[in-house]
Length: 422
Image (cartoon, rainbow, N blue to C red):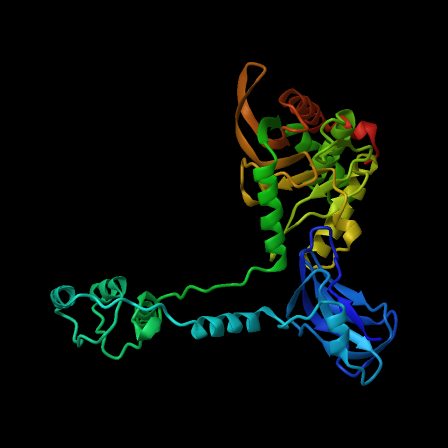
């Protein structure tokens, strides 16, 4: 009997996927282990291997089309077999291969729905309305049968546009705002057009998860200002010793946060509704900006790794994230997250907690300013960090104590690096 191939769940947050490419066409032989398709999830594009054998009978979703997780995307069976019976048996008949046909169906349904009957106005009211139109738009070279919205008329008069020759795209041929705007752009090509871009899978997931976090978890924020003079000196010395490889300030931040989390396990925790999980391991999620949104690859057991290891892993993971080659094990399991916008010139910001973490650390840029040291005003290097905390898990004092330990390691890197190999 033919087997229905369903959209796999490629990540813990995936709700629907896009068929980026089919590696088989209808009529091809499919063996177990063959790459059947490339599927774009909310985090990466991955190859999907078939577990079934037979002939590819039918593609439910065309290349570029979408399907919800666990719904039909293809049918494999014996050559000549009726795939429709398999779809019915699986209760997964899909009327459309992509969203486009659904929109067309919606248009057809709308067109087939009869418009509600409009009661005839009383003669006096019609005459009054006609007189009003004649007074409102004496400049327009139109007859009484021309239909135009008040806003469109106003825009046309402001821009000195004659309505003759403009074809209305509104209901019943009515001239509406977009018709005036499109005519204006055609007359003045230098005017920029707006454009609508369909929301991709990654952005949909970011929107859903961060909305759930922001409005579901009671956030509060703790900001601390760090003296970065010794961190700057330590980084220069390390980079001189390990050339040509270089470590970044973000690598120092990851290491300092990871070691501080071992000292404060109450921060390295997660909310699960009926219980709080205090993680025995430290897996640091590092926010990486990519073309379509944001990904958070994970540096595992970061507290026990050398600074150069952390640096190399972050570079590799960031490269995979930007090329959409991250694997599930590289983005799952974070216990704490770091978001750094300092390289973009941002001095201070707050970040939304990345579930299931209870905290996220927002790193600002290093700035030079006058500071008082030993009673004298001197030039100093400062950096602000803000930790967003889930109050269901972390109290203010708990978060403050963690930040004091983090501050100690960042301001005295020799203490941090003396505890671990570089």
